[in-house]
Amino acid sequence: MPDQSRRDFIKTAAITAAGAPYLNALAPALGTAAAPHIATRRQAKPLGFAVVGLGSLATNQIAPALQKTKNCRLAAIVTGTPAKAVKWKAQYDIPDRNIYDYATMHRMADNPDIDVVYVVTPNALHAEHTIAAAKAGKHVLCEKPMEVSSEKCQAMIAAVKAAGRQLAIGYRCRFEPHHRELERIAHERELGDVRIIESGFGFQIGDPTQWRLKRALAGGGPLMDVGIYSIQSAEMLAGEYPIAVSAMQSKTDPVKFKDVEETMTFELKFANKISAYCSTTYKVNGINRTTAFAERGSFGLTPAFNYDGIKGWRSDGKEIVANEVDQFMTEMDDFASCIMSGRPTSVPGEMGLRDVRTMMAIYEAARTGKTIQLG
Image (cartoon, one colour):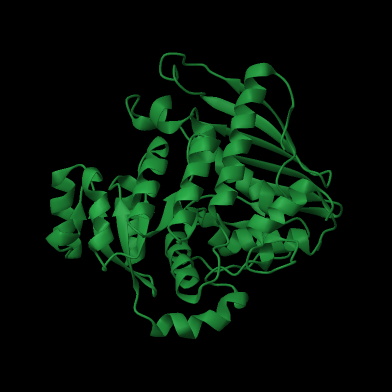
């Protein structure tokens, strides 16, 4: 493809299938393309994961998912809260030598129990903890968004590369069968060429003192938190990274949202003439969908971004048949498979960097009222 955006997209997204033009050529854990690695992975010793940051996501999603994985095991934890360390130690039988705080992460270098560090701290701390893990010689799986600036993303990529390890970003929907089926329908043009994408994700946020409402820790509001899912969905359906963005933000509660946006609407423009119209908010519940409008009909997911209960539909009446999986289990098993087999991850740091650049451009577009071109 002659277009630079297209080349960059293929380079970072179709990394497991040289020359394949679309993301559905990737080989996540449940995909047939991963089959040659499955037997080898199941014979190998599970990789030890250290979870950094024991908040709600780690407690309710990641730790339980680790118990379901074939290629991973919960080996260590990092927390600044002693009470959490006591609870996790008892619940998961974690030895004292594998319990760290943020100041002692460097000691992981001497711990062979740990192969992978899963960073689940607030957004603006991802670089600090990823770089610490890389310097300790560990692979890193980092939650989305990758960071709050492109410069910090680049520092993360450089540190992990210097350590000779892999860096993956926690884009769980890339490993979710309904999203992969939507991607297949789009790229095989079952309803013709996709022309317009519409996607939205939001919820009514509660506690006004939480870190998600503090720019210094979150980097932004709902765009950084859940709007990134719509960006990822649009990229999967379009098969490209966006080349330009426009945006508008609104705020009805300037006290609660003094640091971050309350609602953001934005358009992503792609080189193949597809436009994606997206919205994200902390104002109301119930916005949770993604739709592709093609030449001969439409197809989508409603709800689209839940941990479970995702439902697909097609305007031609055909079913979207896909198994429900634990998305965190599949993403962790796939990353472990990459490490064991030596294949690159399909969700590398470069993908996270591109999305952070896109979000920074969306903020600039909302601030200036201009369409911002992406290099």
